[in-house]
Figure (tube, one colour):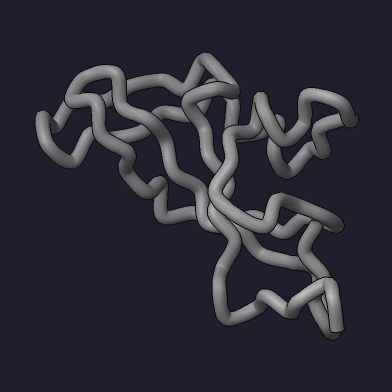
Amino acid sequence: MIVVQGSMPAYEIYFHCAECGREHPIHLKIHLDYGPEQKQSLAHFFSDRAMPPQATILRGRKVFCLKTGTTLKLDNDDQIFLLPLPAQLVSAEK
């Protein structure tokens, strides 16, 4: 789990694109009380705990494939990824 000094950890949001098979940024950040230490899907990280509203609001969001130009709708938590912002990480071992 991430430990952040002074504020809630921020996460960049990516999605796995069904159109081109790549991952694209949504250009959106969310703040969570706790989150993964490395890139992880919403489905995997929140499989054994309640998903906070900041994460659930990503479902149903329309996103854009940077390769094909297609607009897609995020329907599956397996296709939405949290990526911690590295500048905010502090080792939990300290």
